[in-house]
View 1: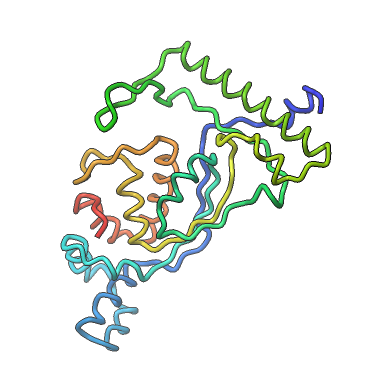
View 2: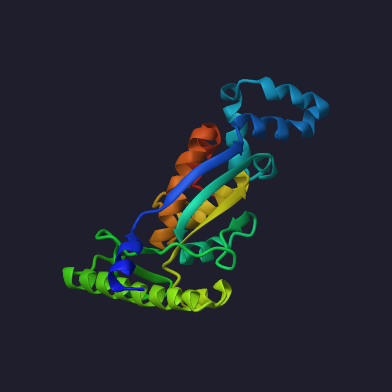
Length: 244
C-alpha cells in the first residue's frame, strides 16, 4: 500500500458518537414497579397514570435508595468511540454489550487524536491529582506522535492482510486509539451507576474523576436518558447523583 493511498484511507477525529437505538423506559415504569409492593396486581393501573402526580414517590425512592423499581426499563445505545473507552465500559458489568469484531471484518482506519481542549498534564499524586492544559508544544507533540504511530500500525496491519494473514492475527498490531462500535443495553439503575462514576460533577455526593474520553460518551448518554425519564433524572440530580 502506497503512502498516498494510506493517507487517503486513514481518518483522525476527537469526538464520540452516541445514539439511542431503542428504549422501553419511562418514569411510569418506576411507579408501577414500586407500587406492586402495596397494591399487588392493582399496580398495573399505574401504567396509565400521570407520572407528574407521583414525582414525590420517585424522589422518595431515589432519596432512600430503593433501587429495584428503577430496573424495570431498558435502553440500547449505539456507541462509536476508541477501544480504550470500551475497555473502561466493560467495568460496568450490569450492561450488556456487543462490539464489532476484528476477527470477522477488516477494521476501518479511524483513530482518536486528542483535541485542542483536552487537558494533557497530570499533576499531584494518585488519588489526589488534577489535569491541566498542555502547552502548544505539548499538543503538537501529542498530535504528531499519535498520527505517526497510527499510520505505522495501520500500514503493518494492511501488509499482513495483503499477505493473506488472518484478520484475527493482523489486528494484533492495532492500537487502542482505533475507533470501534458497540451496542450497550442497560436499565435506568445501571445507567445511574455508570453516570455517577463517569461524569464529573462538583455537586455529586461522591465526586468522581473519570477519564475525559469516557465522560464525553457518558454526557451524551445522560442527555438522551434525561429526555426519556425526566422525573427520574431530576431526582437523581436532586439527591446528589447517587445510584439508588
